[in-house]
Image (cartoon, rainbow, N blue to C red; front, side, top):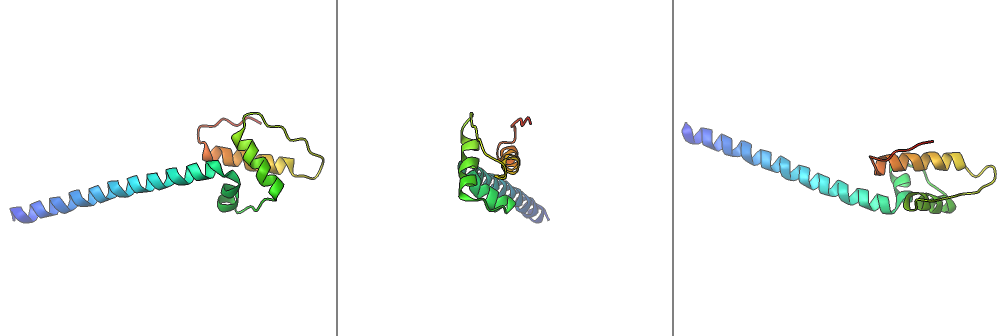
Length: 102
């Protein structure tokens, strides 16, 4: 009876350790993906939002994420508001403590 109880306790401890290992593996994987998507935000837009950007939009999103001072002068019809909205969503997801002021 005592050995049966000890074996049940050992199984419970092993299952808890496996859960801890799974959580650590998951968080390591999340960290790797977040660092990848922070480096390539245009890939994040394609993979997460399912929005396929034109090459000039990919470049603009990249510069918006990586540089503190960014200015884009464009005429009508180039999707400035759309691109800004995508940038704000990316920034909020990839950098959770960001403050976005419009």
